[in-house]
Length: 304
Image (cartoon, rainbow, N blue to C red; front, side, top):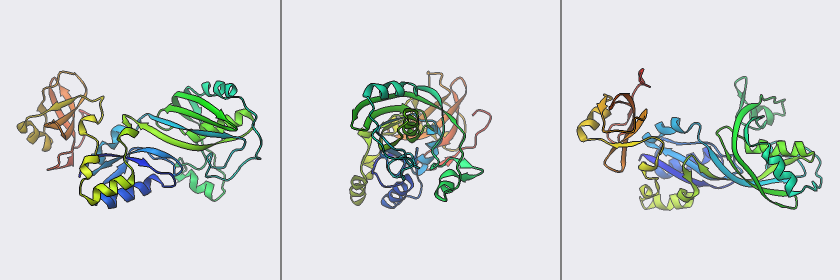
C-alpha cells in the first residue's frame, strides 16, 4: 500500500499517536507524517504510506495555513490552552483595531523565539523535556516567514484569526508575543490547520472513516490521486522499456519539454514510479524509485 493519505486530526491526540493508529488500521509499518500538529490542534495531517515515505524530503519546507483563536488576558507556560497560567488573569479591554494593527507587524520575515514546550533542542535535549522538569529553557530566536496574519473578529477577550506561514513558524509564539506587547498576556486557545503545501481539508478523512474503509478493504479510495503530488514538478509518462531501466536505477531519455530540473515519472495515469533528475537534455537519472513491484531508493550521484 503506497500513497498519501490526509487525516483530519482530532484534538487531544499527538501526531505520533495518529501515525500509530493508521499503521494498525492499514497493517502497514511504513507510515509517516509531513509536519507535526500539537495535541490541542486539529486539521490537515498528511501521511505518507509505504514507499511514499521517501517523498517526505520534498515537504520539509512546506507552507501551511491555519485558522484559530487567541485569548487575551493571561499567558500560559506552554503558550496554549493546555498549559498552566503563567500570569495573573485580567480583563484585556482591547479593541479589534488595536489587535489588527499589531498583527500587521508580524507579516514578513521575523525573528521568533520558539515556545519552551517545543521539540527544539538544547544541547541535544528537546526543550519540552527540560520544561517539564521545570528547568530553565533558553531558546535562540529563529527566522521565520509569515505571508499572512489577519485578525478577523474580537469577542470578549478572544480574537479569531487566519495565518499563512512558512515551515518552522510557531503560532503559539505569535499569540504569546502579542500578549507580551499588549501588556495583558495571551495564549493560543484553538488552532485548526486547513492546508499543508497543496493538501487541504477537502481531501481529509476522519479516523472513523479510515477505519470503516479498512474494515471493507477499501482504503485505496481515500488516498490522494498520485498526479496531485508535488504539482511544481512536471509529470511524464514513460514507456515500459524506460520503466525497466528506471526501476533498475539507470538513466533514460524521457519525453519532457519543461526543462525542469526534476520530473515525476508515471506508468500510465495513476502509478507514480519515480522522481528523476535531469542530467542533460532529455536524459534523466532516477533519484527515488517508488515502483510497487520493486521499491528502492537509488543513491544520489553528482546529478542531485
